[in-house]
Length: 374
Ligand code: SF4
Image (cartoon, rainbow, N blue to C red; front, top):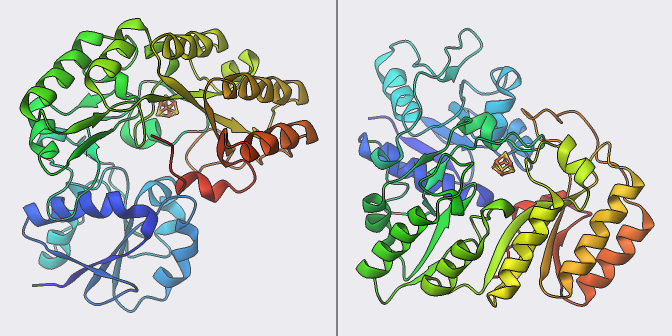
């Protein structure tokens, strides 16, 4: 039996839990390593830290498999560095690839090499793939996104329609936790087409979970699953206050400018952000908005509008600010983040000092590691 190793990369802990479980189901036990080891070493690469591992992969004295968002977006480059590149979702493809390496059969769909590349032939059915086993990961309740925000890799990797895990499967996964938290591109879209809110679906999820686990705390709409503003309404917020322990909701606002929101294809307006913020405060929930600054074509005026939104929201809530990153595989790949105007630095600096703003608008890497307040 081949020895299959997993290269430890701290930002990829959730992928580790997920892929460990997927490989285990097919009879492969992954061993965590801090460098490439025989026979096979797997790498999951995101687009921030991933490039830092390319030299290691290039010089590895073993079979190397690269996957994750960066490998998916840059597979044409990666096939010159790794032996195999898994494009897209790995839960089925990785075990299939391991089998083909063992047997000498052709590589399965969804794998690229220097000689061949067959498009992936499936999307992962979440219920068939419990997202962790021995090593705990997030409870992923939905995957894929019907929106196409210009800076985001999610719809480009997981597809443009949203899939959901069944409540039964979520309940089974939740048994491992005393605090139940959800991973989703938009937690309040659970059970829907991702576009039209349906609070009844959230009600079923929360009532069945709390009925099964009356002593566990449920957190919805906080890290690791934020929510879109147009899904925040009186009914959905009442479900959070009624069933959940979080007293904050994390809302993806991204900009304070309607013109910019339109250009990046966010699919919501600034007034919907304010409606969401107002719904939260009316119900005694603290809003936390997510903001991105430094889009390549963001004008000075648009930056000022975003700084204004942050200043206003910070009077009643919190801001989590990120610097724009041109992620590979997105329409904004290859563009550069523009410099921030002094006014933004001043506003963000003073909000950060008062504890009302977190994240980093200067160092994009922190985006991937900083924690959001509960
Ligand atoms: S940012 Fe959110 S809503 Fe936009 S495409 Fe990505 S996952 Fe979807």
